[in-house]
Length: 149
Image (cartoon, rainbow, N blue to C red; front, side, top):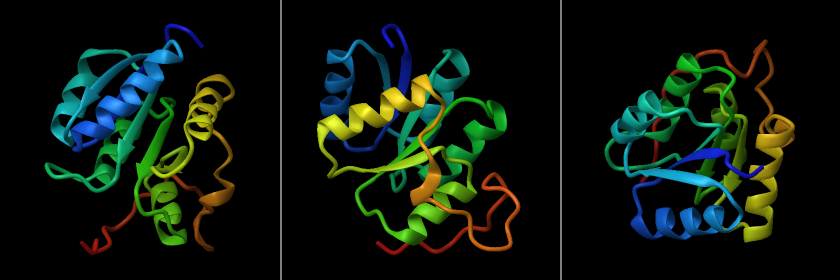
């Protein structure tokens, strides 16, 4: 796992700092971005083994970021990192192509476990993120849903 490059995207500086430090302590090289535009710029100029992104950010939403990354690089694992995990959020991130979702309140051990699994054996199973009935693939395009504040 050492030497793997991770792009961490979150508009909250404390989240970027905390998780960048945690990932660094486990041997990962981390580049952070505070918004969708900066994330796409970093993604276009570096090779990343994994992208972890917040979903609700000022400066662009993480759902669109996931979709754009997957359109550009379908085999790069992307994990949605959210403060409010629900069944509908899980389904929606699966629709836009995320390989998994982690709630921000998870333990550090669970966070690192999911990262390791995503880097080592492909993304962890989307059992928590099933595609709604009638869809043939979680990578099908979505239509935007309203996001409550």
